[in-house]
Length: 255
Image (tube, rainbow, N blue to C red; front, side, top):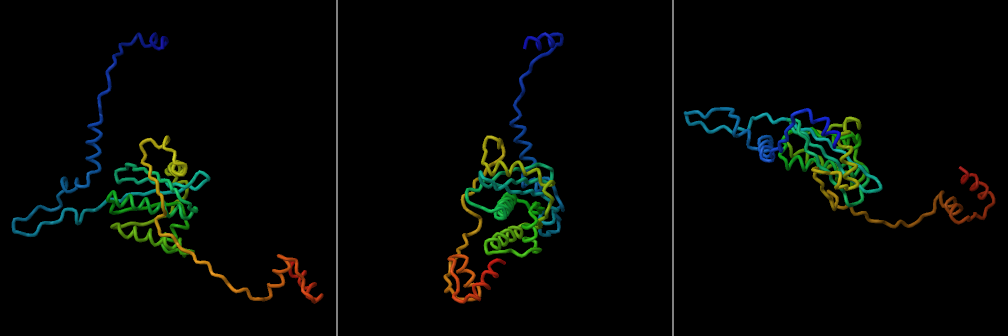
């Protein structure tokens, strides 16, 4: 500190405390994200004096596109999702979700996509481009791949119903390197590290987004077939009585 004082002593420096910017930040936020700003600032048609019915200002207004990036992470610490919603002005709305239930990689991709679409609907997005680096999920939702299993089909139908609620929306696949802006968020979400989050919102999901799929176990009556002798030999070391069958059985088991 003494060295700095000597070095800076030759300059006429004065200290002024920084003024508060909270009020201006709030005013800027309201100006950028007010949903009624178009009604107040833009007039598409002037009211006619001939008594024509009023024109809805927002009916033909060209809504801009929003961009959504979503990704998931599943590791030993848990599972989580990272969401980045980019406004038409370039502002980034980031969110992290931690899953407190067991999910596979495919289920986590669907959960991340479902939660991100719900957030976009709550914000009031009309036109949306959702981007994911999961080729499997993107092709299943768009109809390119067939959903395998009842659980995956429930997830796929849920995403399709959410996409239909937008005025215009589509799901695109992107390479992982182009989706790197959510990699850090998804890893934080899987570990639920609130220290690193800062101002990023953290959500905790207790249960899956789809109902639980019930699997009923059926008991089959065992029937003897050509595999019975092989099964008994491998499991219990049982041999048939015919020596010729024993030689044939050993030959089959070796294959």
